[in-house]
Image (cartoon, rainbow, N blue to C red; front, side, top):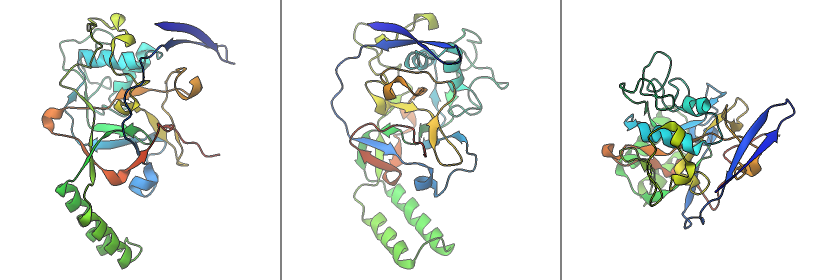
Length: 289
């Protein structure tokens, strides 16, 4: 079921909102918020203002097939069709040189054209700053070796506060019982899951968000809330998003992408030090007064 209503803005524009009823909340899972630029990189990325994307795995094999394109439309049901389509733009954030436009011909099920071409794909497995994830904590010897190598390199380049700090970091790394999160994501090899008894659409006009088993409202850990980091270090909303009554009180726009990978190329293991355990879903945005 859905209720429709209009929001009128001071500039005379009107946005039609769709408020959908949702099933009971899923069982509680441990959530992990991805840390921001300064905690991960040591400073604000040089491109700021730019998308605050965080790479979970350098793998380009998540293909955005017909049904995945329809799903992106479904999870952004209050956005215009064109703005949902642009989330797979080749020069934006999630499908760099592997998506739509900019001289690249890809199968476009948003507009039903070029369907004999290859579909777009995500050039990396990504999330965004301050987004939530879930999964299983485990140990990775490869991650330990990466951390130890990084510590040794920092000592050689005199990038450590003190030898004692470097030694403590080394001991912490080699004695850790868990050091990565085996991230739970959608598998791009399978179509997005539907509720029992529902069927997949065969045209963009037939997409019904209520058909899908997982949506950002009910399972936020399975979705990216796209955002931007600016030069001040603020994490702000992505352009061209839409308002949703259930998201931050319906006052701040959002653009969503699925957390998705091709598991035919292995699991997604992300360093725990880049994540922070949280008990509830924090805002994916942070502003500086």
